[in-house]
Amino acid sequence: MDHTFKNTFSLYRKRSLLFLIILCSSFFFSQQAVTGRIIDEEGGDLSAVTIVNMSTDKKVYSNLQGFFSIEANPNDELRFVKEDFRRVSRRVLTDGINAQLLITLFQIPKDVGEVKIVKKLSGDLEQDSRVVAKTDKGEQVKQAVGLPEPVGKMREKPAEVKSVLLPMLLGNLNVQGVYDLISGKARKQKRQYQYDDLQEHIIWVRSRVEDEYFVKAGIPADRISEFIEFSFAAKPQVRTYVKARNLSGVLLRMEEVIPLFIERLKNSHK
Image 1 (cartoon, rainbow, N blue to C red):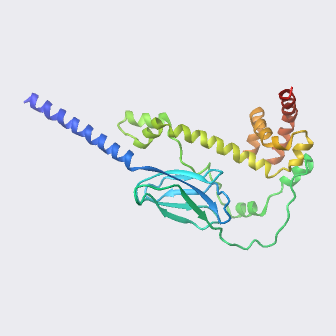
Image 2 (image 1 turned 60 degrees about the horizontal axis):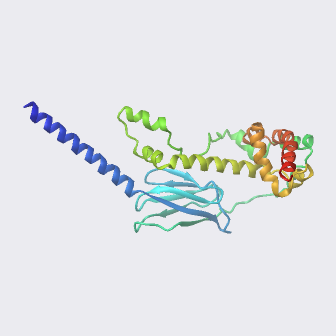
Image 3 (image 1 turned 30 degrees about the vertical axis):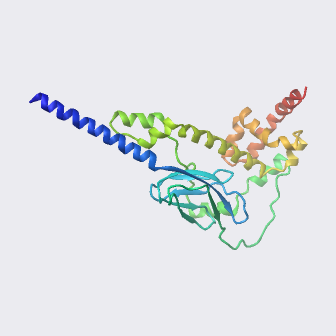
C-alpha cells in the first residue's frame, strides 16, 4: 500500500514539474521583444514617450534617440503616450513577427498666447541666481492647484536578485524576474537608465547656459559636454543641484571644478 502511494506521489510530482517546464517554455517563446523608434511630425526624435502593453500593463519609455524595446505576445496592443501629443495605438506581432516599428506622434495644437523671449544666463552668478530664483507661471499654477510631483521616473523597474530569490524561498516563482536576471536584461536596463539619466542632466545644463559662459572660462566649445560630465564625477554636488533644478547651485559648484578640468586638458596635450 505504501509502495503504491509512493509511486503515485512520485508520478504526480514528475507530471507537475513537466507541466511547469511546459508553462515556462510557452511563456518564454510566446513573448518577443518588439523594438522601434518614435519621432514627431518633423522627423525629430521623441524621448520619454510612455509605451504601454495594454494586455500585460507593462510600461517602458523611449530613450533620448526615440528608441524603445518592450516584450509583447502576438496581437498585443501597444499604446504610445506623451504629453501634448496625440496618442497612438498599434497591434504588434500580428503575423508572428514584426520589423522595427516607426511611430509618428503628432503634436496637439494649442494657443501659446503671448510669446516672451527669455534670456539665457549671462555668466554672472549673482545676476543669474536672481533670474533662476523666479518661479515660472507653470510652477505657480501647479502650486496653486496642488498638483503632486511625480515620484521618480515612470519606467520599468529592473529585476533585483533579492526581490526574485526571496519569494522563491516562499514558493512564489517570478518567471519574468528569473528570466530578466538570467538573460542579463536587468543588468542592461540599469546601464541604459544610468546612461539616459546622465545625458538628460547634461542636456539640462547645456540648454540653460550659453556656450560662451564655458568658453570664456577656458573650456573649448567641443569639450563642454565632457566638462559637465567630468564635473558630475569630480563634484557630485553638481549633479545633486541638477536633480533639484537649482541652476545657481550648479554654476557655483562647477566653478570649483573648472581649474581641474583645464589642468587635465593641458596634461593631455603634453
